[in-house]
Image (tube, rainbow, N blue to C red; front, side):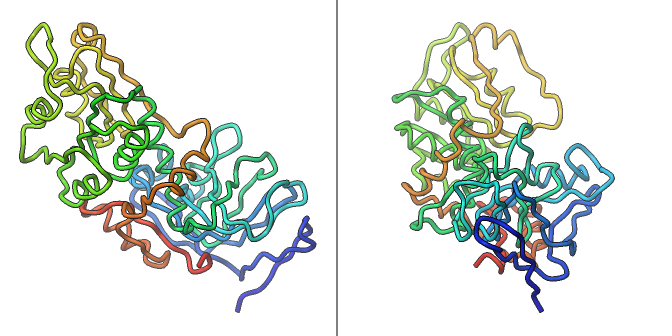
Length: 359
């Protein structure tokens, strides 16, 4: 039986629904992730509580599980989940501009305002999420009524893809190659197309992910296990002169694959003046030929997190239907199945975990 816990707030004793406990996905150690029973939120006057509708599983979540935490095991279990949307069910009296019933994307935060699901004490893979310091603003971002909440949960990975595209420093007429067509690579592709960059080649060994890239509007989608990617880029984008011989005329590259060979290949085979945006996680050092970096005046940019205006991602989701990137929706109770899917196969797009409490 569900109990109700009430708190004083601007909505005159709003109710937070909860029982003796609720479910929360937490990492306990290396490759030890569990669905735990935890206490429901205990918010304060500067906090808010969101009834989660859906939360994505990110590649970084898989890294946290493998390591046993943000950078390794910690004294307390680490909650997971930072890609989420839901409905506000309680607001503290010091929180302005947000009301109970608002449909929102939760900004997962940063080092200044605190984080959600990235080493913090809260994570979005739970039915009811405590959002600390909502009174600071910018944590709860409204979702248009026309946008389904499970699609709105794509805002965080889309923002990561948008930042990767921005860091590639592209302009109309540029030719781009995106290595890796997981969700971040696909969203970087979508962001490039939104900028009017229509000559974008996607590269991924997964047939399903190449299909998703073509559906989004990729100029071509290449299987690196079946074709010579660099010969194909020269055929599709043309060639540019270089001291040691012609190179593909591709202007910019986005590395979203995590494959160790991609960065050395780009450095060795890109055109002079090219740009490389690295958004994939690379846990180990990668040898780089800095003679080529110098000779080609190659620009290499790391890409981390989001554009300055996170709302840009929500607005893009409202303008353009990107729901096709979601290939699997799995209830929280079957989180293990979602995790097995991501670990065992790359023949999928975005995997969302849905909460009964958020429907």
